[in-house]
Image (cartoon, rainbow over all chains, first blue to last red; front, side, top):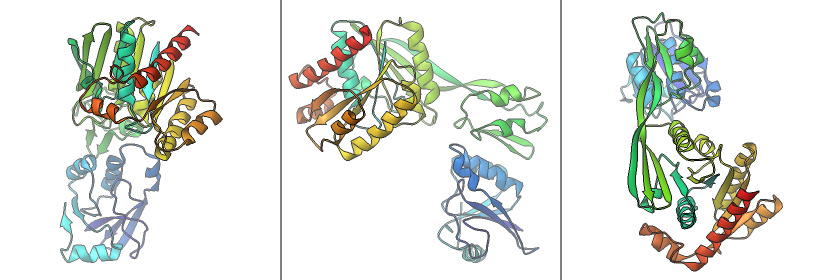
Length: 112
Length: 285
């Protein structure tokens, strides 16, 4: 299974980014292959509008089944993610990626 | 002749100035007062009149036609606002993000994104003797103020002669809605208060007007509170100060009852007349 994280870096110890649309990076962990792929999303800073749909579209291309994030997506992004069939877990905004992954595994995150 | 009343900072007295100034002018000449703060218009609380017209306003939004779409992705690549998103074999359109620029629709090789009318708000026109009052109001849930402001100005241009005095009560801030409301004005009055916060936002508003190459002047409201920094700033930058409206509890009391101020407070009227004279002189020149 592929699990996506909104993050401020691209390592296990990186901090999570609590924002969805304007997250700095998207980090995807494939727990079967035990492999990371990442996307540098920092260009989103230059977008005045539509950060949510744009990041959602990028996430869709990385084809994860699950998204772990902080505050949760806004309305437009939520619409895209729902169409894409990605399950969303929130409340991991103040954790590291590793902590967020463990929290998810232990069912300690809230489903959006 | 178009005078826009703007501010930068919210709550400095744009509506108080717009409504009272329009009413003062209407004692002698025909005047059009337009509330262009379409997200929360409030001039209508102070201006009563008979309704003359009520129009529904629309904006154009693309609608995806699945049967002819070849999923080439041109629409998504060209939308600057991410209002069109391709998700696998689907195209999603976000009407609230759409700026009605037609790029996706025009570029689509199979015409699969025709532009469709969508209601965004309402324009109402009232009349009270010499004054025509126009209020546009965005529907709840609509995020784009600019198209409605633009269409309201267009309506005014079409229906009133260019010599008619028009006063635009503009939105606060310095972003797109203010630019839309002021960009066609002959003169912009920036209302501020003599406080650090007032000065900070006035500076931003002045920079915006300079960028737009708009003639502008300042009205200081609640004169007597705060400090002299706004006056000094205007002096240093050669910005005319058209009036200093004294701070008064009575103004707030009348405002809270939805009443005009200048008829009740002579000092307020005296300052308003200075602005009137300035505008008349400006018009002559």
